[in-house]
Length: 519
Image (cartoon, rainbow, N blue to C red):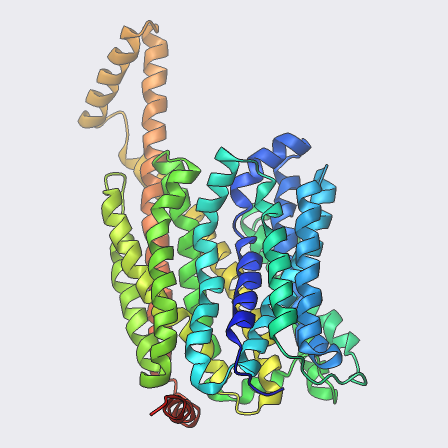
């Protein structure tokens, strides 16, 4: 499969499909209360609508490389896009929580394959001199979609109908299939490629167990038998998977790529950036809705500057990458993430929303510089075109795992630090301290003026004190968690300084770009 000249319509189709798949990982969260009412489901039951999507995506990603080789990369992408669109239709028609979960599994199976195969297609059909802009545009689908998800979801739920979250994918999915069929060429298929069933089973056990553990860890307790069993299953499955892949002539995933130092370090940098990024995307809505009392729509608008800045900067940096290299953009982008990220970690109940908008916009610009470019580092490190699909599979698996670990880890830290701060503040807020006595007396009088008895007014004033302690403890915990996200990005920055960029590949891109410019 050689690069083709008229690739942009096909790239647009890939971006559109990937955008929908990534968007559906976050857009559903706002509609959860509506689905609970319609289906009569409990909180634990409805959470499987979200969890099943994440687990299924992770389980099918290792299949992407095999399907591309066995059936051709274009046919595989069309099949995955069809599966995602069909799943979206079934989600829109779901009549119960069980049918919704089943439809989400179908949707996620298509989405997980679509993201990985789509990235491989871009690497194979786009000429080297155009790779930067193409990957920059592709980055919009991967990193902007989760940021705009809450805004779109809030609009659909409040102004239209929650089912529109799913059915809106149908016309765009059909358009993407048409563009792929018309504008992208097929790769050579190897019908005799054997399927590594054992490798798939062990990879599915390892990934599903790990992601289920980090998803349910805070709820079930990290030291509970349930979570420890899942983590042990993930460890055992991972070890058996690696042993299998190293011993078979046709591995499902080429784990030998980890012996390539630039590939592994680039993968680590990208994973750390994902942890620092997506943890914040999930923490700030907690601050907005639970602490400030904002609506879902208000929260989406608060997050919008980051998405817009990232959406503008990502393709621009894609064009610059070929000229100045990936490493300067990643290092500069991380600095631009770390500095406003530190100031974001100081937010409290009195922080001006405009200040948050500017900090998120700067952070979004930094993410636009470093997110997609950091994903290219491990891919550029792979010199053989035949190993690009395997590199794409590993990159997407690491991104999925890093996202889940980042969210679960920072949410868990937020919960634990909240309990610590609440205990510390409760020790300071005692009835023997004069300021506390004065505040209690004023609030007691306020409630008594509203018609409560003196005893009831005192109980209400004490309850108000307890609520304030919890709220300020939550703010302090949020600051700790946001600071941890900054420290993760600092670790990514330090690791990136040790990465040696593939100069030969970048030089080839520069020379190709020069030769592509007419005199």
